[in-house]
Length: 410
Ligand code: NAD
Image 1 (cartoon, helix red, strand yellow):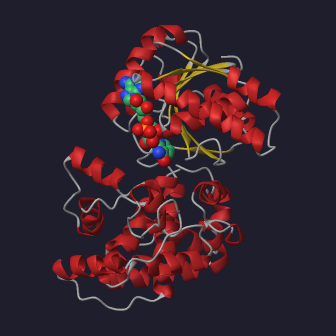
Image 2 (tube, protein in one colour):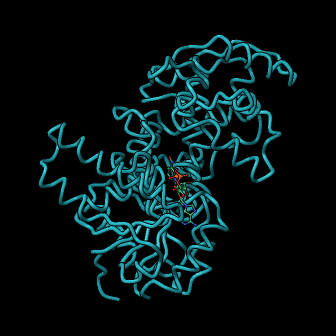
Image 3 (cartoon, protein in one colour):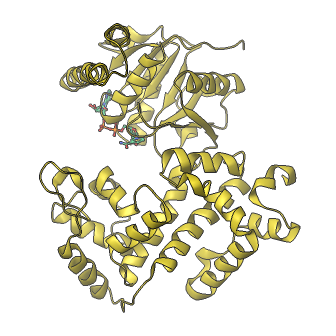
């Protein structure tokens, strides 16, 4: 296969992510055709794109001619037949495997055989999506972060069958779009969201054991994170996972999500509803401490039989950071990430990890893996097997090495 050039693309889905992705492509000089099965959504999205470009002109970021050129590269398409000649399709519809498979099956039948088909899924199995097509070598994940036209990170998800030339084309496109691209293997959540799961789980456990959301966030923001996990949930919307659990019919009973469930049942979805883990004055994004939330957290945890205790910032930091590092080590050990540096790039550019701390793996190397291993073993003895150090950590400690040396070993 010769080098694949992306000149024309299509985006399926005109929601939050579709809008940002379309602008990334148009800004990089790629002509984009846009499909959504809700014509009203598409109309609104085209207006939103025009407004963003007009705003960029008012801010002096681009001139009118550039805004017009970018906007002119974006057009609505009625159906898949209208986009059959594109070089790349990026799908950004709802996070539902069956829906994505249906769309990929249809696209595969209509779009020219050499085109690349990509999904912006946050966590779904790329191989299961590729499997419904006759071109699994040309299927991959292009995981943008919200807002896609602003966030620097692009996780490029390599499926089991993805061809090297297809990965190269995605990397070249990432560069044209000015992204920091990181290749990830295929696993639930890829690099970033898989690690985030363990970190959030620890934060939620601490609410049940005695901490309050503002204390967890303050400790992590004190370390330098742009936002603690609960402020992040308020921005993203607490209801997204709540609805997904309802739809899947599982996971709703876990102790760790009971605070989220109660907040959502009370209509506290986050910033968009003026209240979530915090309170927001009308029109403001300033997260205000809310004593009602503390009372709710206390009620939920005591109702579940927890004996609350004071949890200080050191414990909050240790548990959240070690959860990230241990999962990062497993990701490295499994070859999901090519290097510790790639994991750090993901956390620095997509998850607000403090730049001066170098990313979770670099931070761990700076602490010394012996102290990381000891911390994990202590937590394992205190609270269970999920803290067992990753095999890679034991091996590196044994060899007197750090995560940064891993490629030399592996
Ligand atoms: P959204 O709900 O804002 O938009 C989804 C769009 O898809 C809607 O406009 C809808 O009309 C359209 N759509 C639904 N079914 C369709 C079909 N059959 N054909 C064409 N269009 C269809 O969703 P979103 O937040 O933009 O998320 C899209 C994808 O991106 C999901 O897979 C999500 O997991 C992923 N993602 C989201 C974020 C985020 O922060 N929102 C971040 C990274 C990745």
